[in-house]
Structure formats: structure tokens, C-alpha cells
Image (cartoon, rainbow, N blue to C red; front, side):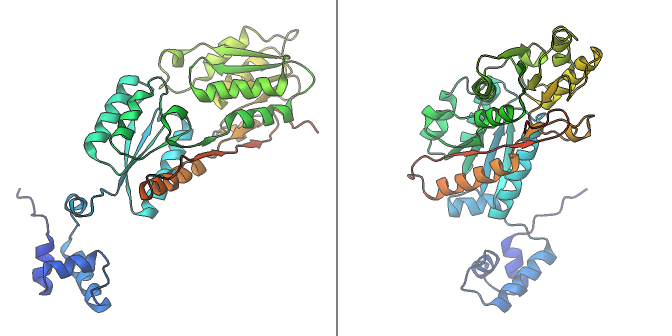
Length: 340
């Protein structure tokens, strides 16, 4: 089978009887071409199946019109929403998106940075692992604009867009906590978002609180999905009819599923005997019985603001560093009513 030859700009020019320079100006929207001529050239280019050569265009313009997005964990619903928001905002701005996934692995992260240096993208949006900040400094040294998302590394001086996690958790816990003790079921991972949730929990409750680290498969490989049974095993060994907290806060909604089961196995009732507050507002949260009160994260806003900030950085590399921290929303359902 003979492959069809790619249609070139010269082919379009020959068919319309104009110079390649005129055709190029018409297809790129330059003002020197009349509207009637432009419409005729565009129509013929479409009929022939002409696709602009982006590599050649980048050699002329000095830009690739490609932004990179580096995320850590594709199984996290937050990142799925983030990817969609970034892609949508980039499309509006005329950019394509190159997606790289590190899976919370430092070697993968270093490889991703080296790939970005080779690919020559116009800018980078990244969720860093945070364990080896110097890896990301290589992009700055190469003059590549970078905006960090969700997890910050302040010493690098990059722009940052994330959620005020500590404030969100502190506000939510303060609104649903009762007079009794509260427990936090949190991941045993050294990342800033985990630390921020713990700080917010403790700020809201002071000494009458207990932080419990959930052992599980993500302790060994943080790129794996959350599993309710990790939290269930811990909760089942601690919660009894005679000894239970008034409120359980979980670092993600999946842990809340495990807590629900442990509470019911003791003959207790979620929302009455033990209140449960989740984090993330994943799609199943509203369909539990009772519905899970949880903290909804503005993933769309993080992605949109990140792209906007990166485009501003590309346009003005010398502008002062900007940090954007967005608010999260408490979604009240039956598992933990707001204390009036």
C-alpha cells in the first residue's frame, strides 16, 4: 500500500495560483490579504487536506505552542479534573498539551524534566514530588517558565497555584465538630497536602484530637489508588460501641468508606453516633447512606488559574513571583451536619 504524500503549502499555492508567501499569510490570519482571497485559500486548503507544519512554524516564531503538564498520580480524581481544565484552557489559548506522569517516583520525575528540556515546550505546569527540589531548578536555569500546582516548593521561586488546604480543613472541622473527641485518619506520606490537612485538623481542635496514620499499600507506592480497606482495617481495630470518637475526619473520601463499614460493624450509626467528614467530594460521596459530608476541591479553578498564570509568565518573564491559593467548599450531607 502506497502512503499518500502530505499536502504542502506549495501544493495549496499552486492550486490557487498565488505565491506560497501569500497563502501562508492568509492561513495565519495576517492583515495583508483580503477577506475574499483568504476565504478562497482556506476553502482550498481544507479541500486538499492541508495541515500546517507546526515544527516549521515553531522555527519561524520561536515558540512551539505546546505547554507541558506533569502530574504525579493519574488515579487521583482531582488530577483527572485538573487535566481536563488545563487542556480546555490551553485549547482556548491556542496551545496543545503534553502530559507526563511521574507516578510519585523520583526517577520518573527526573526523566520527565530531562524530556521537557529536550522537547523545548513553551512552559510547564507541574505537580512536584517535593523530595528533590533541585530537579525542577534545571528548568529555571534553562529559561523555561514553570508554574507549580497543588504542591509548592517556595525556595525555587516559581509561581504557584493551589488550594489553601490547612484553612479548608480547619474551617470544615470547626463547623462539624461536636463536644466529643475527634480522630483524623490520614495517609503516612511526606507531602505538603498531608501536612496541611493535619495542621488544619489540629488548629481546629487543639488537644482534643488524635491523628492516626493509615498503613497500607500507598505507603509503599503512592501512585496506587486509595483503598477503603486500608482505613477499615485500622478503624475496625479501634472503634467499639464503648470506645469511639464523636467525629472521624479522613484524608480522602475512600478512607471514609472504610470508616463507614467499621462503624456499622460495631452496631453504631454514621451521622449520629460517629460523624464522618471526608475530603475530595468524589462522585460516590453523595450516594452513600447517609451522604458523605466532605470538602470539595476546586480542581477546575486550579487548572484554569495555572494556565493563565503560566501564559502571563511566558509573556513577562521578569514579573514578580505570584502565589494563588484557592478556597475549598464544605459540602454538607448526612454524615456530619454543621453544628448550628
